Image 1 (cartoon, rainbow, N blue to C red):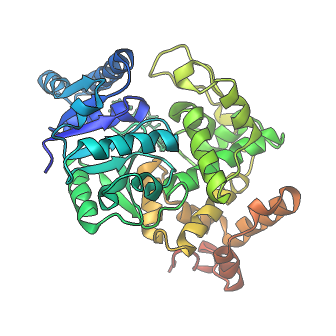
Image 2 (image 1 turned 90 degrees about the vertical axis):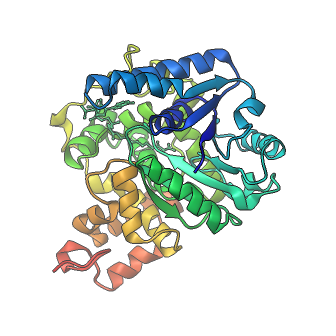
Image 3 (image 1 turned 90 degrees about the horizontal axis):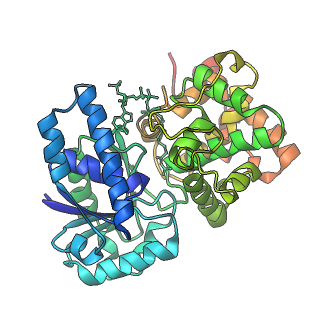
Length: 394
Ligand code: CAA
């Protein structure tokens, strides 16, 4: 396996990926454009490792060893030298990523695997600027990488089986689980579903159908997601979700970014990291917004989740992933209490299709129910109530 790896980009995801790799014995070169960003990244890694020591999950000695395995540098050449695996985690800008991949291609051993942690940009296009598209692959971690169990592997058109196998072996050494997104579709599996869900929450608030706290309360206390959707947006970064959403929208219209997100993004209200997002923060990394449980019944979950189920149906119908892997993706990548297809079966496929039809009549074609959902209704595969939906029930 790889002894030394490099992580390019020391932001929210990059520092977390470096932390996970170092925790699992790898020497990691963490690279970014300024010493200040790198200092900040190390501070966050240290904070996270200390949290683990406090919780008894890590010893003090292991903390020191882990930190010692992380070297920081502003030189891409230094990071890339002798690394057989490089994971890029710079901001979601296609031209920026292509520039980095082109440079990495010229400065690394021809066998080096070039991975990207992109959350929605096309792997094949990033690979196209290199002389080794077979060794370019999506290695998509979830925030916080040190806690979230999933890594989503995304194949570009030319990614080789050998590359996939090597990366899967690496991921297993991190103690992570994986799903494979078979096609290079916008948003891949998890973000295509997550963006549909989060943007719908924001559309609902923008249209005045419910308040932000009502949506977050319903999602957290009734759907039992670990965080409200606005809380999660602040946590992941409104800038990150805005860019990923826009990338999906521009590529195939799989989501439509809401004006609410546009407004927050343009104002620089990125969430936790900027002190203000949908909630406000004092700077304590451990801080959580207060979401009143008593508001949980003010909005129907089907209204919030129907577009995400539609996105899931699109992924299944297009053979991007199968149903078990799709549910595994949201359970391990987003900490859902159960799969979104399992939830859909409980709500009823006919109910969800009806919700989509009403939204379509009011707000347009984006809400057109996926053909798969329409066929399920026509075939009486309505979910738990008819004992057949995405799954069979006895
Ligand atoms: N470092 C170390 N430990 C951490 C940590 C970190 N960064 N974050 C949380 N923890 C630990 C805590 O110490 C705590 O440990 P114990 O169980 O031993 O007490 C545990 O994790 C749970 O933390 P909290 O009790 O503080 O909070 P929580 O129960 O709300 O869990 C969470 C935090 C795991 C982040 C949870 O809220 C969650 O799963 N949220 C959803 C996260 C999610 O969906 N991530 C994916 C976003 S999408 C993405 O990333 C992809 C993209 O491309 C945009």
